[in-house]
Image (cartoon, rainbow, N blue to C red):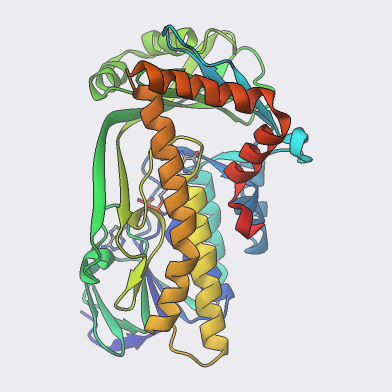
Length: 394
Ligand SMILES: Cc1cc2nc3c(=O)[nH]c(=O)nc-3n(C[C@H](O)[C@H](O)[C@H](O)COP(=O)(O)OP(=O)(O)OC[C@H]3O[C@@H](n4cnc5c(N)ncnc54)[C@H](O)[C@@H]3O)c2cc1C
């Protein structure tokens, strides 16, 4: 038990990719940071399609060079209507070179990304790591205290809740969330395949959700297969040979013969957003602030923008001699995050609902929308640019 009180500018709770990035960005912005996060191997085989602005941030924070060799460039994104409905959307092909880019971003396994973030965090002189978990967070008027499982007492002017879906920090600040169970699950696994993917990510839109094949380095892809929870359970229970066959069938053999690699996970899908992004000396980043279905690769990309924004707001407040946990500072963070998160949640929710809908006019509307995007160049380019980052940030 160590009861001595340790004082910081900011305590970051949670060592997932969003929390680590926030801790590094805050330390880089001049704040004295405590990172309260258990050191544990990353638990699943998820990968992240990191879009351009996320790569720029990771480069600026001196993280990207440590994991870039594990990533695959994403140059083309294809959306294929794989429903057997009467009205089907035409295939839409987004190509990075159409908007003057070499690639939209890079797909990387979260394990490699988190390892690179951990390495960078370990080098920062103003960042102290507590290999522990928070068991309580107590904001009061002038400071916020956190207690760790091993009895450490920490104090700061601001806590960053990067502690994921069941955030203790969010609960401590009495921030309510709206949550909707989507009654869909995502099965994730990686494959090796016979034909090259040519850096093309392909989304097959089925009546139960998208099944996406996202390039990894070499002749490998990560698969995110969104389907009804029962179907996800069934696929999860298949032997390797049967799942390889099912994935090859679902990919319409565009990648040739498919072989699944070891490791699969199922994620029940939900959509969640908070009433506030910051309150009572607690600011939320990553999944404590927003949970989305894996459509359009937005979740962690938004989490990294949370990290960049909180670092900017806190860095400015410290350089002006302000209290980084003061209400006016937190409202700057809230104003920066709300439009981005709300607009993306709305767009992804509509995209998901329109795919699942049995309602014929909705299916026609979706097909017409995709037809317009696919055939009108300026509209397609606008969709690509907005998908990469909100226009007001460019
Ligand atoms: C199938 C799937 C595919 C996805 N694909 C993409 C994609 O291509 N692109 C994209 O941008 N996003 C994607 N996402 C979203 C992305 O995976 C998440 O946004 C991201 O992993 C969330 O990171 P996080 O750091 O916010 O949360 P987490 O990774 O959940 O980290 C939270 C951390 O906090 C810790 N913690 C919890 N409580 C405490 C406590 N009391 N004290 C200390 N630590 C605590 C936990 O142990 C954990 O380490 C996908 C999601 C899914 C489900």
